[in-house]
Length: 114
Length: 113
Image (cartoon, rainbow over all chains, first blue to last red; front, top):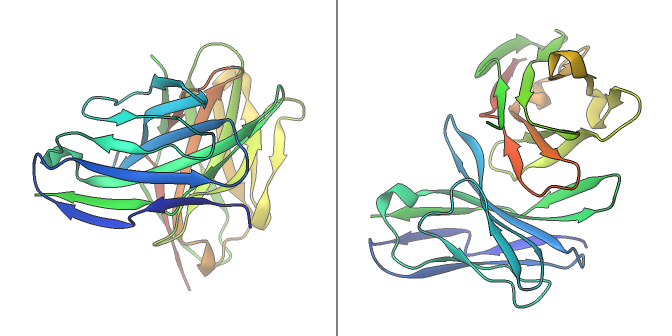
């Protein structure tokens, strides 16, 4: 089954404790992306990756890091989490051609930073 | 600046009523437009998308959207809503050949049975 998986699905942590949220897709997509969803703000793009070893900042990259060492994985790293990073996080991957694109979203990771 | 504006944050309708959710965007160049739906407790699913061609796009579950380039709009419509359409709906845009996707703030739809 074609899917995007994220782990963990729920996480409670404390300020300053480094954490990683994993994202994996089994569709051989080149393009992957991370979003955060906050009430009233919709989804905002954190980082995206066009291919292995190619990443770039989205609209809200501060406080986050990513890496893309393999095509299927795109982990999101919070080196020193703060309470304002409490949010719902979605990973997405997409197949992009010259004429169209379809994004597939993961189930989401709900993060609470105390 | 690139942005997507969804006109209504909350919409309440009775079953069988018609639905129209507004979406306006500000984005330079050729655009790709999307509507996503998020049912309670679930992740986003693609409802429909526009890349080129016929500006009236039909999606899943009886939804359609019309791209009006002169108005920078991509409104979502459904002639008769059902209770199961209760969800949050997001409009999104990205540029042809670009990789940044901008989402609107979302519209929460509640359909009364």
